[in-house]
Image (tube, one colour):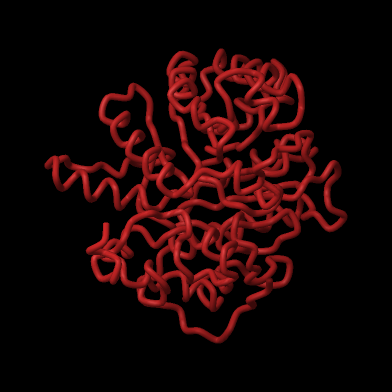
Amino acid sequence: MNMHSKNHKPAINLPFPRLVFWELTEKCNLRCRHCRASVSDKPSSDELSTEEAKKIIDDLSVFGHPILVLTGGEPLYRIDIFEIISYAVKKNFPVALATNATLIDERMAYKIVEAGVRRVSISIDGSIAKTHDDFRNISGSFQQAMSGFDHLKRLGMSIQFNTTITRHNLNEISAIFDLAVHKGVDALHIFLLVPVGCGVELSKEQQITPEEYEDILNWLYEESKTSPIQLKATCAPHYFRIMAQRGSKEGRKLHSGSGMAAMTGGCLVGRGIVFISARGDVRPCGYLPVNTGNIKNTNIKDIWEKAEVFHDLRNPEKLKGKCGICEFKHICMGCRARAFGESGDYLGEEPFCSYIPKKSPLYGNR
């Protein structure tokens, strides 16, 4: 879907993106059932060149120095990745690497550290090999990921686990948390499924219900009180509603964190994050397939300031359905990508939320 820039005037005090998710390549060696991307065993023919990648970094400096999260596909397949990382680091950008870790041996781990990466996120979708490997469709991928983790850990790299919750690993959440603590990761990020890319093929039976998501987020809230590692809900904007509800009752002061651990609000598309594809397409996030322009022919600052979709996503008053009448919409916003996947409207209501707003006619029937 294309939503190219219209002649909108930049808003006063327009927020800059704090996180830039940058897909360096579409090539990947795994076939993960939930992945936002479609499976590809080779890079796209019109992938951004090294010089185009460096120009992106130069152009992004207008936003200050947002965190660059280099992703894929599997970003380590990009042959010039360390040249790109080194260039970004020299320009004072914090760089994080999102990987499946299966390609990380001792030499690769050293190169990642030497290049100046601040944090590596490793996708772990099970507490044991069978669960993880079944979901990633490649036998041995769990052991390879753990080996990659160990190589990085020995070199002192900051590491987080990313776990997407679906039916296959729902009963392993606590065990995955225990594994993360045992391995000494810095953070565990729990992702709620966004059914796009390969994730579209997941049957309804493999997806968990809105009520089960609510239970997971309440579990996360409880664990966060005493957890020795940082816990974060991702693609789960209603977690901020839960924090507000429970924090108010408990008199608990909520901390948003900072740097790699920051949790600054619900769905941040158009306000705090932006996504750049391997071809240079700019989207609100990697899960929302709405192109707003291409950085090969349009400056990213102009896209960020003028694209209609970004203006829409910055305005909670444009939300529809129960999100539009929800008293928590300003801190939550609902997942705009899931809304789009469900209805074709990125301003529609969040389909994975079980909360009934006070203004809803159903409120009294809870």
